[in-house]
Amino acid sequence: MKISIISTAYPLRGGIAHFVGLIYKELAKNNSVEVITFKRQYPSLFFPGKSQLESGGDESEKIPSQIRIDSINPFNWFSEGIKVKRAAPDLIIFKYWMPFFAPCFMTISKIAKLNGKTKVLVICDNVLPHERKIGDKFLTKLFFSLSDYFILLSNKVLEDLISIKPNANYKVLPHPIYSNFGERVPKKEAREKLKLKDEKLILFFGFIRDYKGLDLLIEALKLIKEKYPVKLIVAGEFYSNSDKYLSLIDRLKLKDDIRLFTDFIPTNEVKYYFSACDAVLLPYKSATQSGIVQIAMNFRKPVIATDVGGLKEVVLNNKTGFITEEISAEKIADSVIRFYAENKEEEFINNIEQEIEKYSWSKFVEGIMDLYNSK
Image (cartoon, rainbow, N blue to C red; front, side):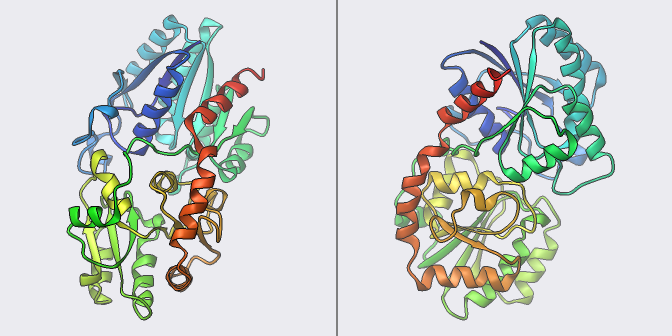
């Protein structure tokens, strides 16, 4: 089977690029696969991070991607559509997470499908973005009108899909584990690497955006410290104004209790942050799903998360972590305190070991093929 994947991919960085690298390697075992990525993913003016390129990774991150697409140049979209049409893949797989890319993906799809052979499958991280703008639903609907199959990573994303395309041909598959960050290392070794000497550590990992609720976690830490001497690791770049978080830390007098690592974390260093902590915190105010859970699972780390989107579909309450029913600093603090009071770490790790097989890349690709062959 001939497949073209069109998405963020190496040498671009981030979770979606890692996802594409891993699915490429699994698909390429039995198919002819090409990956087409962006030469310009976002205009620099609109990119909140420090760099759009992978750096400091290892050889395992590299895949043979073709750097061709310009996200803001319609002439490029037409020329790329013609190239894909001539290549005549059986299937184009798009990774979709925000409507900014809908006009580009729609144009390529429309032209490519003129060959009468090519089908389009969309893997949806989100159908509609967390931070919505006027026109998001309209643009998404236009692109989806040309798509033949949909893979949803949670039931929450499915709800959004059905609201836009009620007759969609879809399958819900859990996000596979991010296995590209290497093996876990002993907790003591990881803490020495990061120069952390604290006994109890929790982790907030990933790009810092307002909807991810880091402010709630900072407030929760103040309450947690009344019971246990817990320290918080914050590892990830600020993608929203850092001043509100830094001023909150100062106001609550938590500067000595929060370890900030706010540069981009290279792929080959991620293992130290997860291995160093006792549990991973996702205090999100809104979500569909999160790849952070799958990184945590790879490192056998319990997750404490709020009850938003599809997080409770993968974080099994009181089995592999805790789900807080209320989105508040108080309830987040209660869950962390309970985690330590009941010595849940070892129990949760053992349960994660039992759950991990269902999140393999081979099962994910098998699900894609089942959907493709269904019609």
